[in-house]
Length: 130
Ligand SMILES: [Zn+2]
Ligand SMILES: [Zn+2]
Image (cartoon, rainbow, N blue to C red; front, side, top):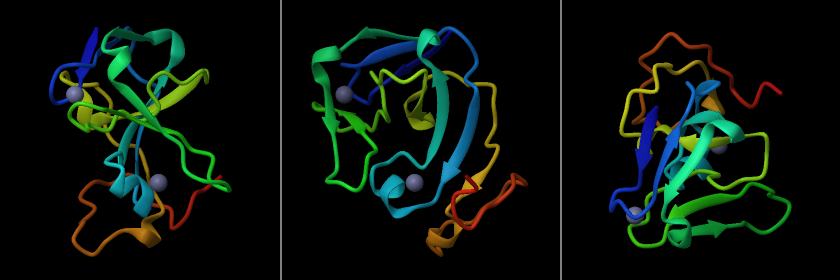
């Protein structure tokens, strides 16, 4: 069981299995939303333990279709917690335990700020490889 929570502890969740993937997006949106390094978790392995009422959803204007959630008490970025998708991203920052995985890729490296040095050997893509 891998535990996760927001900074103030209002939102708590656990993962029943090791997440599918860990990757880092260097685009300005992910950077500003505090979710640059994310894990992709399967919906069935994600279990919200408490704090549903504190999860605030942010939906940007079209054409952007991503959704981001955060704790409305403390502001901790929670990725797409509560998504109906089969697999969704959560920021690795909000985990309390080691997710076992290590970063597997870097995307949107062309948007990476100069102050961030890539220190791992994971493949780098200038944009999104898909
Ligand atoms: Zn919180
Ligand atoms: Zn991004």
